Image (cartoon, rainbow, N blue to C red; front, side, top):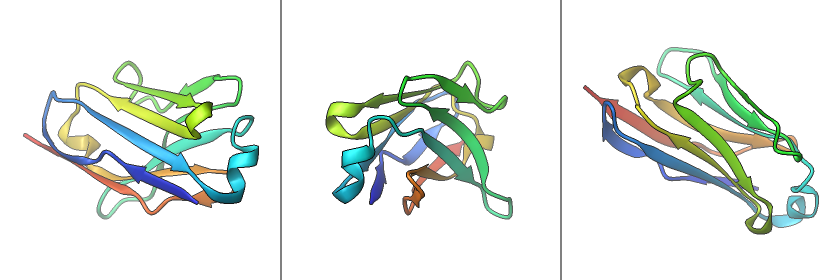
Length: 112
């Protein structure tokens, strides 16, 4: 399974670091797997945020480029999303995805 953590309430301009830890059978195939973060704001569709391959090639949505950084620690079967310069528009439920699985999400709320 995938379990996210690290969400919370932060003022605009602040930072948060999200974590997604893999556990169970999928850990045996975690290292080469492409993993990603998505988000869903109230009343909107789920959208892609960032992804990282097993070779640590990264991709970002235009809305977060230069502000968010995705990384991974294969030893701990964990991926991270460092979010800086947060904006009110970043408020959403953030999901971790990969290996045909989704986490249950962690809420990020950015206040003005």
